Image (cartoon, rainbow, N blue to C red; front, side, top):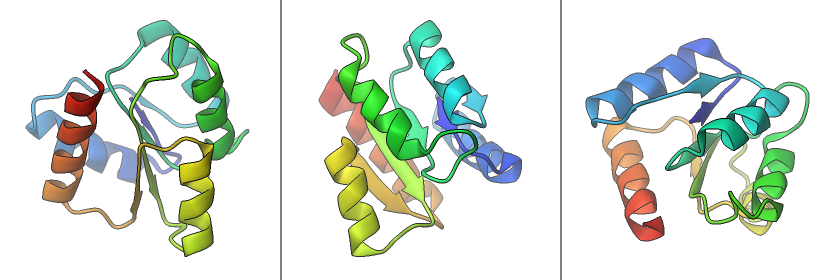
Length: 119
């Protein structure tokens, strides 16, 4: 599942992951992301921090409190790249924190590793 408020960026990530053999679902806001997560139980989540309605950090905290999702690998992909931003993301429960822009091979390797470690 990709949660990204910029449709072009969401589609770019989706294409990268489809090329790696993944089935991709996209959503653009925090509330819709939480509904999608409960409905579909994806293998991994690519999560932006700056999204509409509620922040990515709030979505992340929700995931870590939800028993059916607490072990879900969450890869934060954000333009917020200061050490304090990364620390907040990791404390909220991110599996991995990447800063934009993200290269294809880095994204593929990160998603592959996150899914392998969780399985």
